[in-house]
Structures are given as C-alpha cells and as structure tokens.
Image (cartoon, rainbow over all chains, first blue to last red; front, side, top):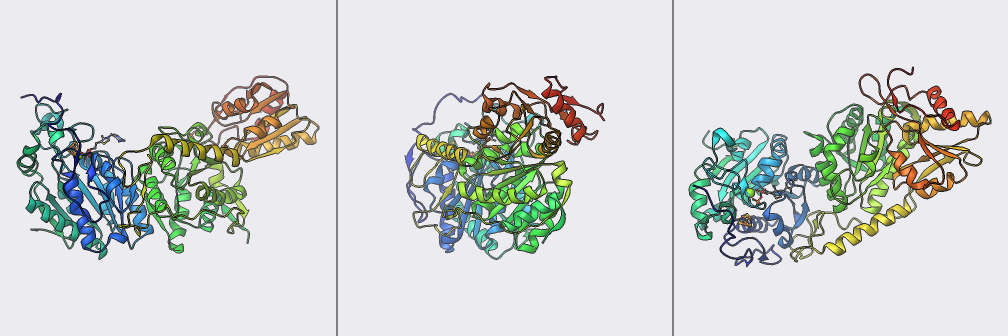
Length: 263
Length: 366
Ligand SMILES: Cc1ncc(C[n+]2csc(CCOP(=O)(O)OP(=O)(O)O)c2C)c(N)n1
Ligand code: SF4
Ligand SMILES: [Mg+2]
C-alpha cells in the first residue's frame, strides 16, 4: 500500500505546550501537535533540575526538529553541526570536567550523519551523556528513512516499507553502544505513555548520576512520536510508536554500572 | 633561551606559551609532527591532546573546547582541512575563537584558506609565516587575534616550515590591546537564570522563536569589515626604484626575498612584497608598493591562486605575471624544483626581461 505524503498534518504545526519545566523559558514552540520531542526534553530538564545540576550543565545540540526547542531551554548550550555534537561535547567536557555535559540529537543526526562520532566518544569512555531522540525518521526534512527505521516501516523514501534486501537493516544503536568498553550506563526509554515518560526521566537521572560519579560514557535513547513524519493521525502516534518502533528498539536499561543488563 | 627546534615543535611550544590547552588532530604528512608535539607537551601543561577519529571530529573537539573559553586549536594538511570546512564556516558565524594550522603540502590551498572554503558567506583570518622564527610569533598572534575578534584564525604553514629546524626562543608574547572578557563562553553557570547562553551560528536567541537574519548578518559583516581594515600585515623590501615587484608568501617568499636581495646587490632593479596576512590581503600596501613598478610577478607554488588577489590590489596599474607553478617531489609534497634559489633567480630575471615562464615544474628542471 502506498502512503499519501501530499497532505499536511491534521492541525497547523503550531501549538502552545501544556507542559513546563523550571528550566524552560516558555512553553510556546513550533513543533507539531503529538510530537514526542518536547515531552522527552521536559523529562531531561526535570532530571537536570531534580539533581540540582542546573548551574553546572552544558548541552550540545544537533540538527533536527528538536533544534527549534533550544530557544526555550534555560541551560548553557552550544549548537553543533548535524551529526557532530559528540565531538563538540568531548572538547567542552575535557576543558570543563566538573560540568554535566549532554548532547541532544536525533536518529538521523546521530545514527546516520554522525555515527562514528558517537561510537568513538563512547569507546573513548568520554565522561558525558549522549541523548538520542529516536523517531525512526528524518522528521525535519519531512519523514525520510533513517538508519533506525524498522523493517516494514513506511517513510517518504521507503514507500512500500523498509525492505532489508533493498534498504538494509536498522541499527540498534543503544545495543551497539552498550557492548563497548567505554560505556557505564545505557538505557532506552519511550514517551508514548505516562509510565514511559516517568521511566525515561529516571533513566536521565541515572545517566547523569553516572556521569557525575565519573563512570564514563552514558547514553539515553528515547523513542519519540513523529505523527507527521510517520503520516499517521496525531492520536495514533503513541500506539504506532509502541507497536512499530517499540517492538524492535526494545525499551529498558541495557547497561548499568558498566555491566550489561541480563548478561 | 634559544634552542634548535623543528617548525612543528616550535609552533606547538608557541601555542602553549600563548595559553593553548587543547588540541585535537589526525595524522597526515607534513602535519603529523605538530600533532606529535602537542600530544607530548599538552598533558605536561594540564591540557589535553586528543587523537580524533577524523579531521571532522578534530575540529569539532576544538570547537567544543573553545566554546568553554579555553584556548584551543586543531590542524591538518590541505585534504584534512577540506574535511573541516563545514565546521570552519559555522564556527566563523558562531564566533568561536579557535586556531587552525594547515601544514599544507604546498601552496595549492591558498583559495581554500582565503575564500571561506566552506558554504555560506564568511572569511576568516589567515596568517602565513615565512620561517620558524616568524611562525613562533604568528602562532601567538593567531590566538590573540582569535580572542580579540571572536573569530577563527588559520595559520598557513607547509612541509618546509614543519620540518626545518631553526634556533628559536619561545616566550609568551605581550600585546597592546586588552582582550574582551569571554562572558559569552559556556560554563554552565547561567542555567535557570533566564540568561543562559546558546552559542550558535544563525543568531538564535533564547526566549524568542526564530531569528532576526538582518541584524545577525549585518553585525557579522561589520565585524569582518573591521577585521579587514585593521589586520592587514605585510613585509616589503627594495620597493623604491623597483621595475619588477616580486610578490610571494610563506616559504616561497623566503626564496624570493633571498634572490631579490642578491639581485639588488648586483644593481638589478627588483623589489619584494610579502603578504603576511593572506586574509585580510594587504591590498592597500601592495597597490602602493607596485605603483612605481613596470611589472608585478607572483611567485607561488601552485597553478596561480594568490595572483587573483594581486591583480585585484594592483587594479591594472601594471601587468601581473605568474612566475611560480605547481612543483612537487615524486611523493606529491610541495618540495619540488621551484624551491631552489637558482631556479627562482632565473624566473625573476625572465620576468624582468618580459619573457614567459612555464607554470608546471616537474622533475625536468634540476
Ligand atoms: C550536513 C547536513 N546534511 C543534511 C542536513 C539536513 N537535515 C537537517 S535536519 C535533518 C534530519 C534530522 O533528522 P533527525 O536527526 O532524526 O531529527 P528529527 O528531525 O527527526 O527530530 C537533515 C537531514 C543538514 N542540516 N546538514
Ligand atoms: S516532524 Fe515529527 S519530529 Fe518534527 S516536529 Fe513534527 S512530529 Fe515532531
Ligand atoms: Mg528523527
């Protein structure tokens, strides 16, 4: 079945968010209704705030829809190139080892354009946290296949669904990073329901605590809704995430205290 | 205290004397020894030198280090610089003051260095030392100018500069102008204050959606205009009475200067002009130096790149000819037959006599 990519989202891509964190300057943003990225960001900011690290945090942001959220984040930020946040974060952390250093990247940014950056940063055991907002598409460019798009997932350039024999296989980046020697903490959360949001916030807290204890590289992947890029009605986003992405990019903690979970 | 040091070692020492505490790079000849020198020395100075996984990450790391207010540098050889251009462009617009060394294989990276080799609308400062002694000074100046203007500075060296040992003394330089506070640098301290920073290349402001492109570009362009007016540097000799003015930069200028001095002693009316800053190009000074000459000759080790800037500076007041050319050894390094005072002399004499010279120097001329 072909998907219709010609129609705009149900509502205009503009909405006043009904959420706020103490580290948010405003709730007004231009991301789509039903987008998971503002929800993930709030979980991240709440974690920074709850750990009392707001005056010690530096974020390095990649390029994707979430980039538009930087104007409302009340933390010191550096805007990096598409894919390049881990190296920028590395340089910053080496010069300011007492700060909480995190990146904010999308799946296109981290797993496509900048894959070697995150792998090397993890393997070097850089004492920082990379954060992946994984929606399985290039949201910003309009819903194209990324390296994390799951088999069968329909995107603008895998119209009949991702076919392994033609498009190749998805990269399960969290699982890959967990196996590297330099990583202390790896978890994959999801923001498709309230319990998932609460768990994701806890993962952020554990990753940041691990960093502040100097345990090396930590990684939090968050599955986020992108109804616009998935071409599904807004209210079907959470269910689609759970069924389509969630069944392949399985949520949970993958590595804790430098040990693989379940190993 | 003077000590015998290779260019690479001396440049690293000069950078450290200037307060550089971060370096990242990826090996490539003839840049490798600079990386080795930083790798050896920075840990001794409480700094860090990281073996980056590629030149793209190397400049990213320097970007992040400089964003926190530290003095930071990276470098490579022309090809590696090509990989860094996306960052060079964004760093210039994000106003991150880093220093980048191109220990080039020859002078074929002049355009890359001076035109804004990446996407978008920008130029960055470029300094081209003639020898190791000057490289020590210009390296320290590079860090100073980077902080003064919040602007990247590229130091253009080459194979000869990297590998020549000279007796130099490296001590911290002092500069007249006081540097602005780095209150823009991210240290995390402003989180939650409502005044937190966002170091970005498009003029995004906290608390407001979107950008104001007009004021952003206007401010950057005004800064570039101010740099252009303030930072033109050059060296000139024997300009008075010169019928032929020889223009050269970096290593080639060392040969040009030597030959011009020799010819002048013999009474031959030739002069010498060297841009020390390649951007901003010292156009005013060159126009003046060339005003009495019948002909201007560019000696550069490439197919003709700086000659464009020379022509723009001279603006038709005298014909401008090329007496350089691509000149490499069998391995492709820029140490071919042109690096020979006898060859340079022959070419300067030809230009003075109005004869054409061949632009490519293979192994034929020896
Ligand atoms: C070098 C480079 N290539 C391509 C782009 C264009 N681009 C901007 S955002 C984007 C996709 C972002 O996707 P992702 O990181 O998954 O973030 P999302 O929009 O899904 O949140 C692309 C390809 C770019 N900015 N830079
Ligand atoms: S396109 Fe997708 S990721 Fe981008 S704002 Fe819309 S829903 Fe969010
Ligand atoms: Mg995405």
